[in-house]
Image 1 (cartoon, rainbow, N blue to C red):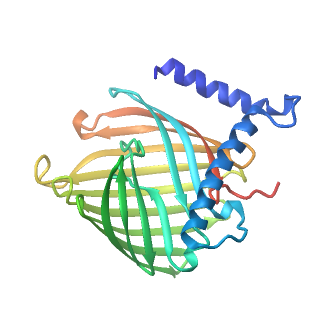
Image 2: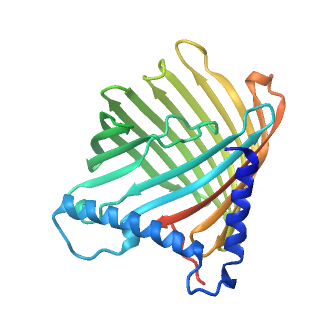
Image 3: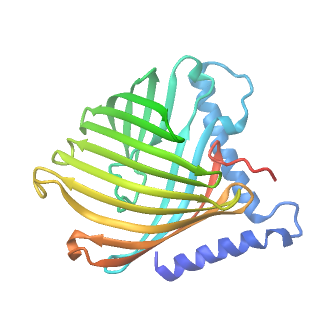
Length: 305
């Protein structure tokens, strides 16, 4: 899709949402489109949950799923622009989870900001306690997996939260995928949170690839529907073929504005910052991301008004 067409689509959606109150009909085109999509997601989740559990009692619709459907445009100096639809969905199976823990979610192969997340891979798992078995789907090619999660959380002095975790997964085809993380979070005041997130991931599928991500975030609450996030991060990798020593691929620093512009489900993100890539001798390049999307089910926040 051309950049001009993408911008025109985003402007039309944004203008439609801002002028929704001026429609004469009881429901706007925006509401109708959303309601139709939401009904489809809920009915599909409800049918699967009923079929698997053998139970047919009523469940609150929002408890059936969490979903985020969005479209994003990414522009970076010296790089090709990216126009990317995203579908992130997690079915919660509330009836069936009384017996087993069922998850259906996206599988991301990287934590890099270059991961465009085209959503062609999903995980369907059945778990109990910290263990899970299931299938990874990429098109029509299923890949069985088993996984085990370990985590420890505690509250330290001065409102400091500490979290350490490890997720080990083994795929029949993709082989071993392990992520170890250590995160710190501190509540500065009612509107400000600082966090330091670190993850180290190993993937056997990609020539024994190691991926180290370190990120400092400062999140500022600007009210119920608006927030700012400031980020400084680094991304380093190594493997058996290209980078045999752990090397930094890029540094990134920037800010992100998120706002709910229509009810509690329609939102946009604007991320602007500088990226320092190894391939450019760490010369600063501008990077801009614009995302517009809709949330469904338990993903929707609850506002006071």
